[in-house]
Image (cartoon, rainbow, N blue to C red; front, side, top):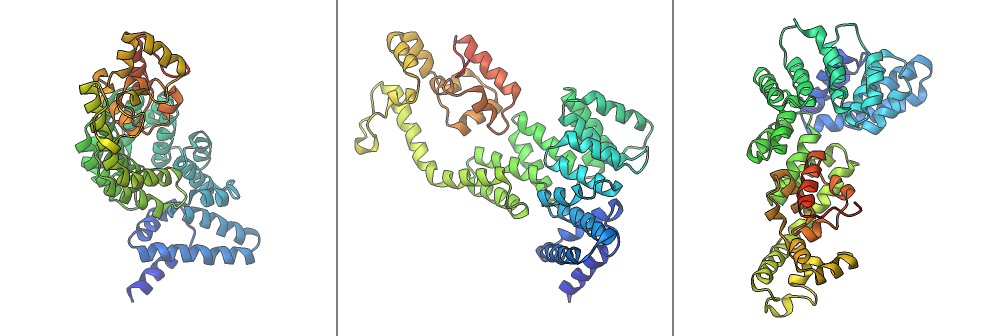
Length: 395
């Protein structure tokens, strides 16, 4: 009976036009249970079959509705394909803009969101536009949009938009205060929870970041970014089972999510590698202490030990180090001795970098491809290496 009732409600929600007014209701219903989610997928198939038989305006109506429903289900590729076909419609343009925001195509999203405006004072659209401009490094454009809301009553959406603009301007304290105010006003405001968590994460406040990511990830529909970052933090802490659960939850929403696929594979591999890696690090430390390979019998392969720290380095570096004790000392220096920030240290751990010699065998591109490693971290690493007269690979 309950299942039938839920299906009937879904059908009623989709009976008329699927527009901005009822989109949140559809979202809420779809994610109330797995049964509702499955029913939504069944309705998609039924509507696609109906579209094949339809023509003209009826076919276009179904295409728009299908695109919006696919957006709700997190199927962004299909949503974009459907909505592109009818993007001359105001509603379709709006939802195609939202789809592009989800897939980090902000530049295209801006034009579509503008076309989908319902009027001059359209806070929902302006908040999305603020987010897009800030993501593109254009806080001045975001500020222009917010000028029209100087006398508007405070809302979680508006506080978030102001916080996002402050953050883009480098005013992190102000941004955090605005996000906190938004969450106080609306405890389940997912965008504010996520930005709060992200800033705590970047500042090394892992405990607070985990708490906020969990709150954000626990909302429906699931906030994919929160799940990904929460998984990364769990991995940093060695909590691989929890990390795997986060990545699987992302893949349950979007089976083709490449980042989640990659991280899941890494986390599952880490479960079997963890003991061996820990043992290897202990042996390395023994070698560093005694100055000779540890007498551990078959546990050490040929070539391991203290000299394994320089494995994979270019021959010219090795040759120079062999003739220059000072260079050899620098290359053998532990990255822990560089006094890097928490963010940098975590990225080094993720790449398995333990010494300066290993670090300089990575290029700038290698490091920037690491999750949560940005330009600030890169400048920090370059400064530390520069002080030692060293540089990254390729520089």
